[in-house]
Length: 148
Image 1 (cartoon, rainbow, N blue to C red):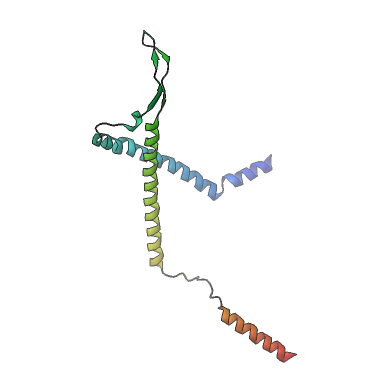
Image 2: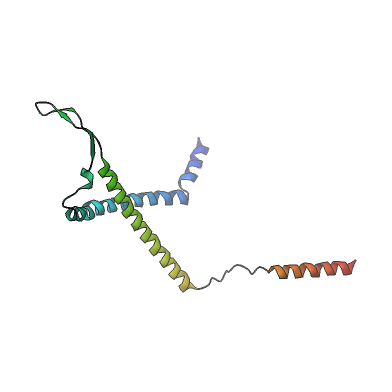
């Protein structure tokens, strides 16, 4: 049991697992912000421009609700809520666009920092060209031939 607990701690507290957990939490919070942006700012403007159309209200009714004489529901409405689907697509496109802009900005900053730092002192050692290797092999074979 102790060994399994030790293995679990090693797995759970590795850098990659913690980084992933932090990313999921931040992504969830970011998703809420974008959903609020879509629902509270963009969609009301879109509704105003389209004379009050609300995506969430769009549906295809398969069978309408049946009401009793006293107003209680006998059978609930059966409908395909394609408006919610459209709303989720809009949310996804805005989130994807925001992430695209963020990654693009991060890459530009990374490139700018790399240019400012200049070339690294620890550059890869120069490897000899094919001609240089062939010349070395020829010279070694000549030496070996002269020794015999």
